[in-house]
Amino acid sequence: MRKILIANRGEIASRIIRTCRNMGIQTVAVYSDADEGMPFVKEADEAYRIGEAQVNKSYLNMDAIVETALKAEADGIHPGYGLLSENAQFAQKIISNGLTFIGPSPDTIEKMGDKITSRKLMQSAGVPVVPGTHGIADIEEAKAAALEIGYPVMLKASGGGGGIGMIRCNDEQALIQHFASTKNRAKAYFGTDEVFIEKCIEDGRHIEVQIFGDKHGNIVHLFERNCSVQRRNQKVIEEALSPNLSQATRDKMYDAALNAAKAVRYENAGTVEFIVDQNENFYFLEMNTRLQVEHPVTEALTKLDLVKWQVAAARGEKLPLMQSEIQADGHAMEFRVYAEDPDTFFPSPGTITSLKWGDSEYARVDSGYESGSKVTPFYDPMIAKCVIWGETRETCLSNASAFFKETNVEGIKNNIPLFKDILENEEFQKGTYSTKFIEQLKSIKK
Image 1 (tube, rainbow, N blue to C red):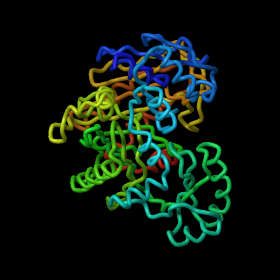
Image 2 (cartoon, helix red, strand yellow; image 1 turned 60 degrees about the vertical axis):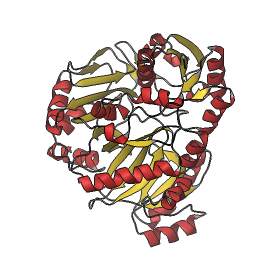
Image 3 (cartoon, rainbow, N blue to C red; image 1 turned 180 degrees about the vertical axis):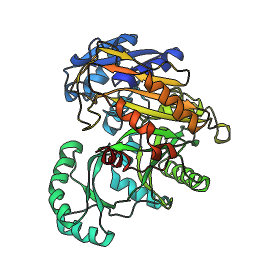
């Protein structure tokens, strides 16, 4: 593979370009009108405009992306994350045009993209799933199922992801209130109005296992990440390894993740997400058939380059390391810096007038912006991912505090003040937090 088109934007495009350059592979960027002049466009060897600012007229335009890859004589397409990264039709279109899709097979993407199908598959593979249903036909069936499962329950879209199409219902009145709107939202976002119900795991921890497979049947795990610091059901901080998790539970989760991957003959990078209750019972939530936003945490822990592994696996090569050769070194945390109000979490687009990151040998910053860049309202408002490493969790926390004291972003509202509050919080320092952590932190501050 000598030339790769990156069907994405911002920091993940820059991050893939960096690895390709190290591998001696040329890169092709595609950009919308809103992204002309952005760093990733300048960093690629070639760059092509594919449409207007709206994502459905540019980054979601499969025909334009594949046609550009053929025009640029690229050999393969890396989808990054989000956008078309988990779209089976896009993966198949790439393959049908004689190009290499850097990711799992379209069949795997399709099976795992439907949460009801994936729940059934995981159950048959012996992977524990959250108590719930395999689809709900109407509100009467929903009411009966929720009564049997017990409130509170989560009403979820079968095609959902990233917290979209998911709502908590504390009682029957809430279920009735949200049932029709959730189906409509599911249809609008994911093309199907199928919904299902799961038991709500109170004060749970969101822990996921990074897996990797090749075309030769080899599958390994690369340890786990704790992703419990969330707002609006979306992650803000991730860390590896997960604090306060027994080794026995950790080992069981690794086995379950590998069984899940083997059940679908998984190839390339993926993640198996679990919800873990207060007694360390864990349940399958979903499998992400792509590189995760938080993959640098695992890279900082293992000292591996997962994009390099992805390209090698797509070329048909065997995994470079077997399980016994993969080691976890120290502790790592990733902080997602967003252009958003740190109190309300509403996006705050605008021009970044000044951007200064802390100077630390223990920090890695993956950013898609520079001073003078404009954060537009068209895309996810994430500015950068700051990944901090330490020999222990305590030194990692100390390194993170020092890094953010020297970090300054001006011109837009951002969530760095929130990170400073979190790093000073005793519960976070002890590692005893759950998915309710930010909600509780805000309550304390009020």
